Image 1 (cartoon, one colour):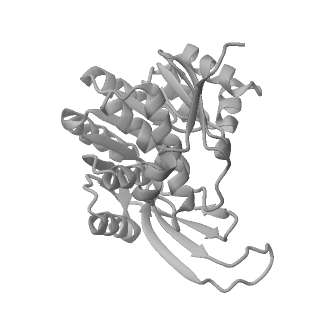
Image 2 (cartoon, helix red, strand yellow; image 1 turned 60 degrees about the vertical axis):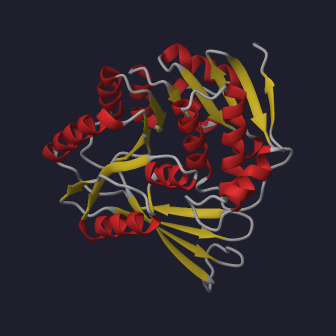
Length: 306
């Protein structure tokens, strides 16, 4: 079973428009409402793949209730901890060429609620084979929150995948996660300077992560692993809504870790599943049939040092 953690869960709203014109008035052709936040999206993708999963994190207020209702409607098991604050909403405006996102900051979480969540997380580790820690932290949650959870998981012998940014990423990497999945901008922020992505991924391993997979957006992935360095990509970038592509990638990587899948196969699945998410109408959705077709087009090759 894979346990996903979303400390800043959201109610995701996606508005579809023919074309986005800043400053203009738009007639929305379709509105989609889904439970969201990076870990929630990962859990939904894993559920679509038939992988046993539990989504946990923090959820509060009427928005938090709606998040739980939508997860139940999707058939995704959840064990969210209730909080007093109101969970956030996110809005994505998507047209045929891309998407523009608006993220609310999220609730303020007092220390007692964070302590209660750590107890819940420790209990859930007893049934987890892999943990995914993903997304931003709400106000009141300390910057070392992911480092603390990584320590608890390591003590329980459960491997961890980390997908974060800024100080939560920096402190989390130092705690020794099994895998991190930054993008190029997050790598530059972590290292304090722009570095070629293959080199940057190797440097992240030196900082404490066992392995690292860096996203190049539509250009694919670079992986620095214990079995060598790899690059994986499709023949060309795909048009669509990229909002949930990174979460689909993380889902494939967590699944591969749980099943001890060889790295080239793991990267094929990750690139193809991310591509399937780009083509989906809303964030956090994938087409399994499209994923299977895209797998045949993914190329994986070794990356030479230097």
